[in-house]
Image (spheres, rainbow, N blue to C red):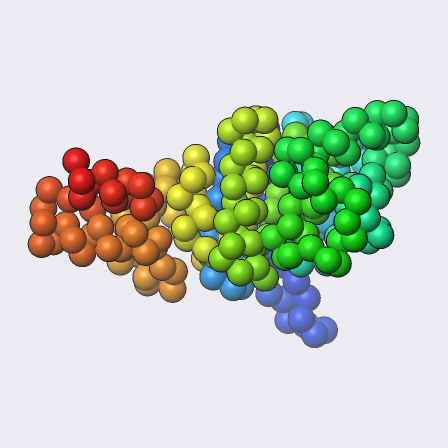
Length: 274
């Protein structure tokens, strides 16, 4: 479990001014869960993400990863082995000349035996659907493919938690779909705990739990259906709802038998063609 207890993080701006990016926030994330964290730019969600594997340390409060305190320098290596991070721009995480060499990089740094490295490369690339590209140069891949390789490089190291900090922000709709399918598969079929930071509402409908942040605090939390039916509240927070959910709400006003809490296109098809 990841336990976040009364976490506050402040940035210094100039000599005397401080900005509170995360404000007295508490949250538990259990193993096997898929948690989506939403919020507009400046809400504190990326700052929170960087605390989960000690890229940032608390100004006050605690972050515990399976009981290990992120401020304990002796536990830093163990924490970062358990919590893998994927960032917004895959080009910043791809450094080798071929896909398989890139996936091998982290494993080599861990001192994994060569035979086991080969097995883990093949397994990780298969999990993200990139096996056929293993000898390709990363710069020849599409944005979605690059991000899937970046994910493969992390999961090859066998983390227990995968934190994705807006991994689809720089991708086109096709690339976003590739990455979302991949992380859903890793969660549902492999049992990997997913913490997905995003501002795309439609990516969060597949999560077990949605957390909405504003000014460094949690302002909404619940299942996707519980959160996204609060349309007016979300709009006041300068957030949208998934387009199909907004459509369902409008249709429900005119056709009451259509549920207002439809989350996906598939659910809409079933509602319209029972």
